Length: 346
Length: 241
Image 1: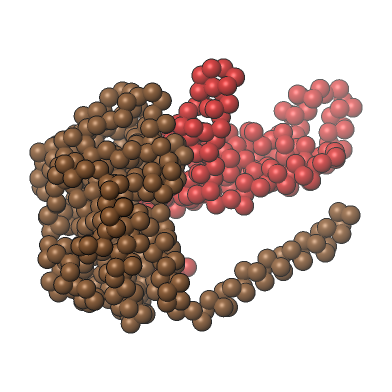
Image 2: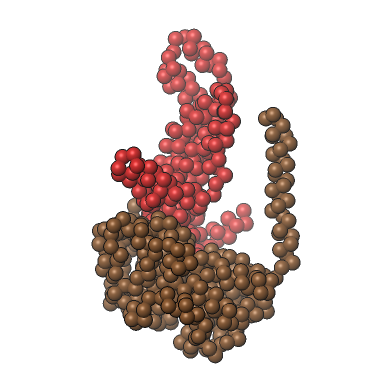
């Protein structure tokens, strides 16, 4: 019996698996594709948006797990031999990528509907939707502790091991948080001490600095408090039915434009331009809104979704950050964070 | 060889890169951490692998193949997957703390996935199978007459192990140490998922490349890591010979 298994069944299995692996690959080669760096299905509903696009046009936009910073580094690394057509970033990183000459200009259809502050006049980058940094709290996983209301609350010992924010050298959302926090605590784009001093204290309560999406970990309760974009929390609550509350910290918070740009030397440039045009159209903007990221095109946020956001009074505490200053400070702040927070401990 | 040459060229393209890597700070800490973690993982996994390797090599028992396959299974997992497994077991709501909570009333090890303990256990998880497989092959060649001769001369099991088996197996032990040590030094996925503040060299290389596109420092770190690994391997190979 055993000899039979190893001599016939195993090779047969191997061949079947190989066949299954190769078959769709052959079919896929004929499909049209747009390669987007940083296309995380659970972030801003990219999963739903790309599925809808596939349904409408037949064009595939495969998922991609890179965070903003990694996406920019990949574009730069592949400059001489581009693989990607476009990338999606949090604002400052997209701004920086454009500055580095990694993008080519394009003004998608609907350009005039994007507010001036949320696009590059030359079309090197533009906003597709915006988010706000917030606490996403799994109330069932807090172990009896109250829902934190402020940055000061997060330092309390009852939250030990219950907080996570992404490694800011990986993700742009978290970089926006770290930069904005420093400003909120009285720092500037040159002086990071106030922010880092807070983050050092916060470190006592932080369980991890993830370098992958922990959306599901928060939903499961593995991570009770995630400092991230508000939309991800609303989606956990309203779409996935999780016991999740979104909290705008009482000291204030920051808005974050999420931007895109056409990669220089994009292999499928024309296909990508059509994709960009569609992303600003009402159906695509409404699809983003399903993940509670605010559409950049006014009037495309469906009323029943708008009602599920926290009241405007809370959002009054959110300030916009200066993307050019953020981009200029990006490398130094990331290094300082690594030196002071990540690279030092046991 | 070409990628290696490119890497070294990157490392030497900026004169300060090696200085930066070897002077006190995050980079040197990561190299020291890698060295300490990999050495500990190598010794502990080889020690724990001795008995199963011996049993697999010498004994025939029902279900042997099944157990052997189960033991070697972690070798097929990528580091990132091992990292996620450790979170499932030792996370804040992991299986181990939940079970401990049911039995003892206290959730032992809750959240330890992201501590040094979790990282170390993850390394053991993929190093023990490697050590078992390597040692088993060596033990198979152990001539049973030696053991029988020692026994006929009146040596007890402990004496036989210390005076006959281990000295005979010493070269294999050293080369197994080298294999597990090198694999740990190069391991990246586990640390990518689990490292909170305890940083290791491969993770720093990744960060330098992805966050800063700093080829010089990343290259210098690669060369330093490779030199360390190679040096220790040579040392072990000499003991093995």
